[in-house]
Image 1: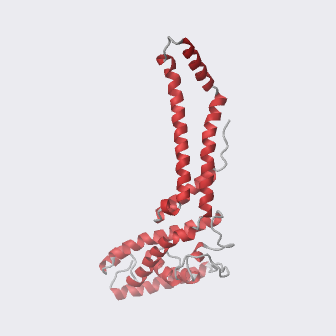
Image 2: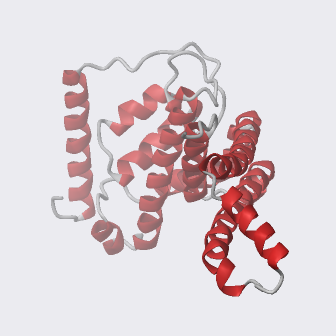
Length: 268
């Protein structure tokens, strides 16, 4: 009979969240010591379970090949124990004890994580990334649209770092959205993750103008004034129509084209 593990699916989500947080650049061992300790203890229990299973299987094969047959009483007791251990119900109960112990620890890890101040843990990394993005927006000339453009103007390294930071910015937004939907973060009903990351979300959307290019992201972040927080202002849904988005994109593209001509850059 299969053993039902209460915390299995929740723990799989936790592992995915921890991996994402680590990829973002947070030291999860420092940020979540209780979570890591519970996970490591569960891992050790499951390793012991596997070792016990292997030892039992190997011992059963070697039993009569290695036991001292001169001690007949010892042979009888050993074989009786081995036979009892081969009982499928007994074997399942042993495995379940290990699995349930690990599952309880996985549940502890999930509960500790959910009680953590996630935004406080993310904030140092968020501030670091946001500061570099804003600095790139202020440093790299308007109109630069590629690493080639940036390199020609002496900003290749800054642009390369911006590409990485723009990916991290998106990863933080996706993580906040996921944790909000999972009930780990309570941002309030219907709040978009960027409302927890910026002071002026509308300025961000207007400046982004439907583009994911690094420099457009950088200027949008700067316009939105990054600040990781629980939003308290009334939620205002992003309400641009598809036509408004298209017009904003066309205006932004035209402005960048003019700026590129002034910088002596060829069309992108």
